[in-house]
Length: 465
Image (tube, rainbow, N blue to C red; front, top):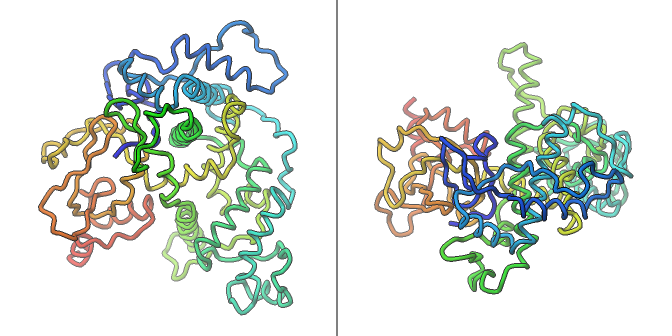
């Protein structure tokens, strides 16, 4: 399987090749992602895109490149340049990565450290209506059709009584609320669209602090969007092959086609539901002074979310990290907005929430290829140097007793059976380590992958305990 997009961990960005993922913990690689020529091109691109009226202090000179990405060889760098459709696409990527770093430096990696002016034309946090009104009302009616009628039994009695006459043909009273567990994923997704419209127009969470994981995830989203937007610039011999599966670059170096990302399941509703489950448990624990309560009160959310509600409610914090990452990328995008399509929250979420529970860690040393991992291999101390989305590999289901092992060779992920597999038997991999006790494994899988594991091993060990 070939990766579609990838990002290196902040701690190891100077030690990991951006193309073949070769890692050296003793010294940094020497081929810079942005050399002098790249820096000049990226700087001129950013200058042409900026709308600021402030003249740069170093006018006439290339701005310093803060992006610290590296390659282990010039050959790897050439492969990467080809992946972005050539030098123009590569300059866009360098300008965007550098813009992200400049934003982080300007804020001291914490946007709270300086006052940030609101985006021109942005709604104030107290505004109720935002975004495209027609689109908002369409989303609202999809939910209201189910929620506003008393017979649905989903609203509180007082709210239902107040809306007895509602025929759901007009906008719903903002006082309506609902339990997200009572609606389908499609209905919840429509409501989340409304939340993000408010987040975007109201600049909600624009000042939230970012941790390393959100910065790295922002780079991963930016990388995919750059590759996707420059795909048309690929030469004919580098275009998507007849099967539509892989975009061939040079030799045997591959990058997955951007079109493969769309069918991958987005986990946006799963992430929100998982956050609410934890929030319900925390609220119940607070009210019961630490003793386990008999029942957990559901967290209800407003049918018509407003920016001020999102910013100051506990349920709104479920969007804080992703919104802060989007805000960072939105500010950085101004460096390339004249050369790439505009960045919207829907484009951002298209990648961001497909990464959730679908990306693969880039570990060093990688498991051996074409052979099951030995006991000695499992005892090796490993370092996670980055993560990547392999869209053709996300369809493997999990088992705590997998019949397939993962093995990375360079940037390519191989999947090797570790025992004889019968015809028609499902091929299963493990989502992370499976050496922990069953309760810990199940807890980690529920937290990070949003499912209760009922594989044969878990059932047997749970029964035995």
